[in-house]
Amino acid sequence: MYLRVLYVVLIAFLAGCSIGREAVDPKIFAGTWETTAAKYADRFIDIRRNSIAFGTGGQDFQSYTITGMVLDSSAGRPHYTIYYKDGSGDGYEVSFYFDAKSKVIRLKHQEQIEWKRRSRS
Image (tube, rainbow, N blue to C red; front, side, top):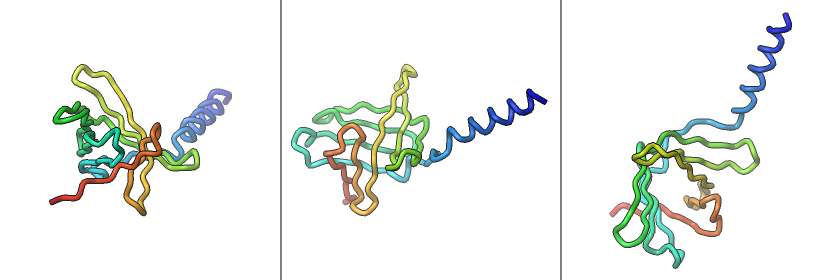
């Protein structure tokens, strides 16, 4: 009996930990994102279904494999996190807010900078 109660409490706790987090498909943000911020004028973020690349200046970029993406709305202001890994398997993540009205991404650690999707020519 005691083990059943403990099991139920554990399951309820684990289920509660994921409340407000849902997996999403990165393709909803597919495209190349750029900013007019002078410091990052030659930088970009390119998101695809299975990959993310960060322009590092000029023609240089670093590309990674996306391993997952979640929308977290548990702590007030919803934000997205993309999980990715490099060729050696090291894992990373980038979190951002998305303003649906202005269609702007703001990286969680640099909210003052707006990234807009490049329009297709």
